[in-house]
Image 1 (cartoon, protein in one colour):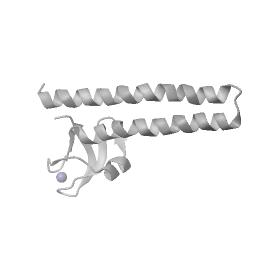
Image 2 (cartoon, rainbow, N blue to C red; image 1 turned 90 degrees about the vertical axis):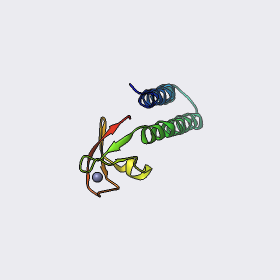
Image 3 (spheres, rainbow, N blue to C red; image 1 turned 135 degrees about the horizontal axis):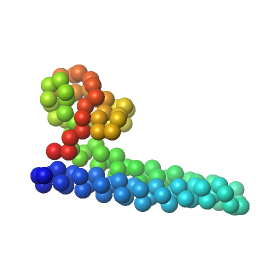
Length: 115
Ligand SMILES: [Zn+2]
């Protein structure tokens, strides 16, 4: 395994762990605020904090997923990193995403490669 691929895998695992450590407390906060007696304003505040925390935690996860590794066009072999917009809108299945190649313009399910 080369150094770049090893680094990319470590970054991906780290971003998933960081997101999970935020996701679980937020989930508990959402459930907790729904099940116990609290003032209306405290329930709303707890839910807003939980949702904002999830959004903030998702940004580094998404950044790592976009910028670590690359996608390879199955038509011309071009290696590319998609823009945030095309990445966000692309339908995906584990390891592949529906994208348009910036070189040949053809679309398809392109495979993510770490290095
Ligand atoms: Zn292409």
